[in-house]
Length: 478
Image 1 (spheres, rainbow, N blue to C red):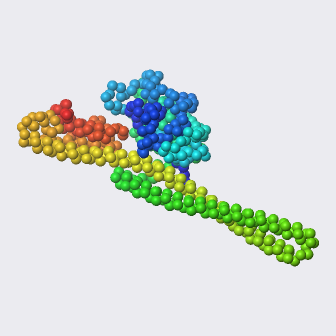
Image 2 (cartoon, rainbow, N blue to C red):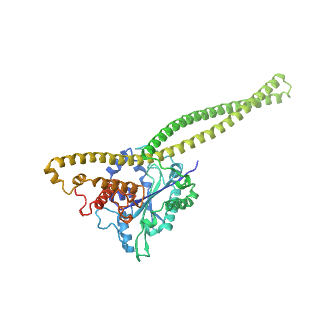
Image 3 (cartoon, rainbow, N blue to C red):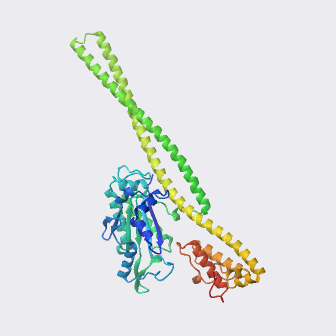
């Protein structure tokens, strides 16, 4: 089966101490213990000594021996004269770096990192004896050079290689600081470099495939090539669960077949050992009888008959030995094939588990949003009724969303906000100019792909409110 390369990219708006500690493994003993005991994580502190990072010039150094990531970012800004577009903002808004993850088929990555060493992956096991193989270093250097050639070595602010998790991988942070001809200065050009065009991601996969070819890793088919269709999140999650269950059943059957094949191989080896021993005994007897016949000039009829019987027995044993050896060879091949299938399915199951966890988190976010939206709607409806019947409450609700709800235009505000929200999360660049309100394309509160979904919803609501209530410059008050 093909061994696929793995590449993932994610936009970064700020660098936190937690992210730095994660990349550089700057954890206290208690933090290591918490990570190791958490069922969601697969960290192995006994393998932490195998981690490394690559710095300028392609030099390999111990992980965590360089400056913190934020300091490296600041150094890069100072060296180029570029500015942090999020400077002074209470909440970072602009993308300043790309976090890339490079890896591949789990078994192939472990082979490059550990060779044929015995590495126990169960939690709590001691793997301090394991040594890092040079192949993983050479692969990492190739990826480092590819990144440097594509986006500039000076723009690489972190290149960490982790061998203490279930599958070896690289975390690479690139801040795309480049000269802007139009603005005549150096600045962070994230969208021009990594965003805005799905073809860019395909191009990166193609580029990496050329690098990974020598390491036996190939790229999968792109969405544009496979014509993959959109599947609703809840349906996708159900499919993942069904696939996981099917893989578990298939793995259980394969493991049972492997045990049977192993027993068959063991039985054949025992038979061959016994037949080999019998053959040796018969050959010794034949030699003894031939010596006796030679002493009697071959004129002993009983010895001659015994010799013929022994030779016949030897011929039978040789036939059985040939048959068992052929069967052993076939059984070994079948066992190797079943083991390869099991490794492939376990790798697939591991990938499915990661995707399932990510999908589960996304579903939880949408479920939370739906529940909060429903609860908020009920709260607003009740508040509107109270304001209508209680004069004191009506006065308190002035210039708030409660007051707006009593106005017929509120439905238009909500309708506009909903349109903007839906089109924003689907990557639209304009909204339908109908139903009242709206605005030009340039006014649309474009949703950054990494913006928190609740933050974007609030921004849509504030923007829609300002379009329908232009005289209230303060917007929705809280």
